[in-house]
Structures are given as C-alpha cells and as structure tokens.
Image: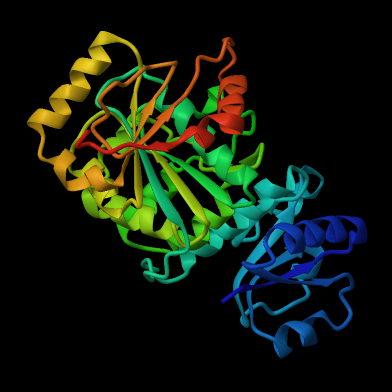
Length: 342
C-alpha cells in the first residue's frame, strides 16, 4: 500500500519539482497530491485522510491537522520565526532525495512495527571469502553492476565490519544505522525506511555504511534475517557483501542466499584459508550446491571445489570504480561448469 502524501506550499515551482521527483522515483511507494493555495485547504485535508503532509508554516497555521497521521513543517532559514511549532520539521532547500528520505524516516518511525512479509522479490547473492584482501567488495559490486546491465534492479548491502562504500560511491546518504536502531527496538516500518534511505549511482542501488562499527557488531542473527528478507522485498537482485568471519550471522545469510560467490585470489594465504574452510568447516558442505567459486585477480584453480567457476582477470588500474566496472562488463560471462568427479 502506498503512502498518501500531501504537499501544501505556495511555492508552485518548488511543489512541482518535489512532486515530480516523487512521482518519478517513488511511484510504487508514495501517492502524492499538491495544494498550492490556502483557500479550500482545510476542506481538502478533511475530505481525505493523508498519511503524511508537508505544510508551509503559513498554511500550517490555518489548517486543522487532526486527520493527517503525520503533519510535517516545511521550513527554511528565512522562516526561522515559525520553526517553534512543535511538530516534525523538514528543511526545504536541499537535495530532493534527502528530503524524501527524511519524510519516509519520520513516517517509518510513527507507523507500527512492520516485519518482513515473506513476499521475496529478489534473488539473493552472498559474496564471501575466508581470507581478507582478495577483492571481495570489488567482486560484489562488479556482480551487482552486471545484473544492472541486464536490466535488473540491483541492491548492494554491505555487512562488513568496516565499510568501504565511500571508495566506490560519491553520493553519501543516510547511515544504515537508522535501520539497525529500528531493528533493535522492534518498532517502526523497516521496509519504509529502507525505501527512503537507499541511494543510486551507476545503476546500483546501495545503502550507506553505519555510523560506527559497533552498529554492525551488535546485530543479532534475527536482526540479520529481518534486514535481508526486508531488503529482498524491495529489489530484484540483492547482493550482500560479508565480512571474512564465518559466524552465526554469516551462516544466516548463507542460509537465505540463492547463490554464494566464494572469492579467492592467487596469494598463498588465500589458498590455505580456502583449503581450511573446505576441509575443517561443515558449513562448506551445507552450501556447496550454492557456491560459485570466483578466482579473482587472475587466480587459476586447477581443481575447483565447486561445480561453477568464474575466473576474473587482472584489471590494470588503481581506481576501484574502474576495476569493478571493467569486471562487470565481461567477467561474469565467463562462468563455466565443472564436474568435481573428474
């Protein structure tokens, strides 16, 4: 069900830009209406129940908002005398995506707790390695980009302890810590919040990293389940970048995943850790049918432990964005099948 939103402002140009952006980018989430004059505004608000309404200060003084679930004040520095009104406030003049994110965050917090419905849309791909430094994040983004090239809505979710998102994306949106807080408190609509704070760059939708590493470390296995299953409802292709640990939270993602990209590079330490994972950890046996082994940075694998294998070349660039984009164009078209009995 879409959020019924009213924008009530005398700035016709501003209202057009804001409502146009919402209609283009959030048409499946928000049903937006615009009111440009104070005359008849009270009748319009009374005639239809709105979930959220954005009011200019002048309009807010003239209308009774009891029928609006969440009234919010649109304000700017020029209206400083009016911001003492005791309701939520949204700053007018900044990037529209940030405005919408703020509005949906406000609304998500006042609605009832919303758990994942189980109506999963996405194919879930977990990207993992027992060894650090093998290029796991680059491969994860390359895979997400390759899915985007195929016309799919791809969402990248970084669950590493220390996020490297700023090295790959220039746009910095709201921290995913706001989602974690909602998961921990079991209050509010997580799906609504996720739809509001996700960013898009180079065809990949992504969620910005947490405020600090403690926000990741305190998540429970149940929190991870809720986060992943809810993300899977708002996209077609969910790519999850995991830390090198093989703890209960990682195993939870493995269980939910349709595919696991197991990354290795040519270094000896990566080869040793992969061998240890295969021989000493029963997790491998439980997920081996899902595994595609990815030999990154030109790694050659003579006896792959999985049926499916992708060999990614060395990309001669120090720019991580150039590397993942280059790999996305050709790398995942090289997937081949192997028979482990040979």
